[in-house]
Length: 182
Image (cartoon, rainbow, N blue to C red; front, side, top):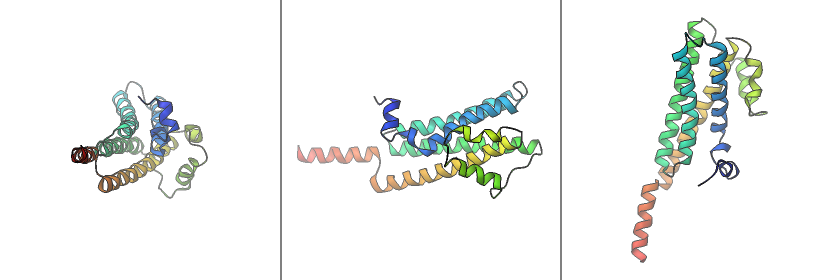
């Protein structure tokens, strides 16, 4: 069995940018729900948002630990779908409160996108926790970046699958080779 320490040291999922970003999104979503949503009135929304953030992160982990490339692609797709759902929740929050959604060319969005390059923790984003416009716009930017990265990861995994084949296919080849020579 591979420990989480081994996963970190040997290039496992904990070193993936999509995983690191997913952890930040999960942690900040939890904070957003506690800070910006009413614990009684918005209980269902809080549960949905928290579960979507958790599902996105956990499916990256599960997919990365799969031997089957096909299952890795599938689970990465589930992660992508979960983050798509979470993105919609943040857009709904802003829309229903008639708050602005920052354009992707907005200087604040560009600053957020560049912040990760210098500090890959949620501490980088503390200045955006100040109000009900900045915090959800921060999350929209982080999730959009995560979705972009996941889309790239899925394309890369699909390309690898086409070139190298899948787990079952490769096991079958090895079994046929074994039978030929034994």
